[in-house]
Image 1 (spheres, rainbow, N blue to C red):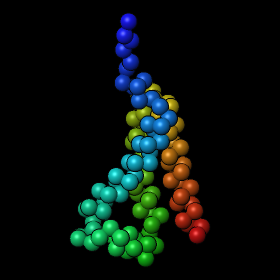
Image 2 (image 1 turned 60 degrees about the horizontal axis):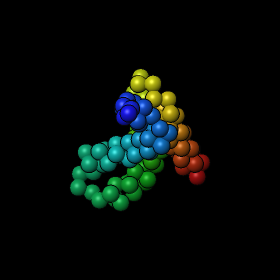
Image 3 (image 1 turned 90 degrees about the vertical axis):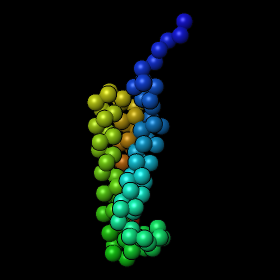
Image 4 (image 1 turned 180 degrees about the horizontal axis):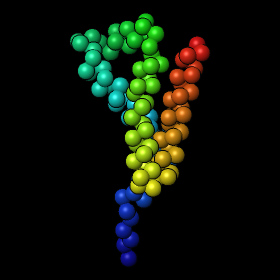
Length: 102
């Protein structure tokens, strides 16, 4: 007998949360780049951000949408995936801390 698995059960995995928590900020960063680069290359855009000393601000802005994913997983009671998003967000926070200290 074939057992139906709800979609929330299918995607309620730690790895799904980690991947979404790591990839979403990168995707948001690409969107911000596309909207604000004004024809510059990715390398020169990142160099401009580094020279302006706002790289940690940019990372924080890109990680902010993880809150929406976190709340969505919470709403659908997908606690394993929720933990993955939280872990990925903590990794981003550690990266920001390391960049600030250096």
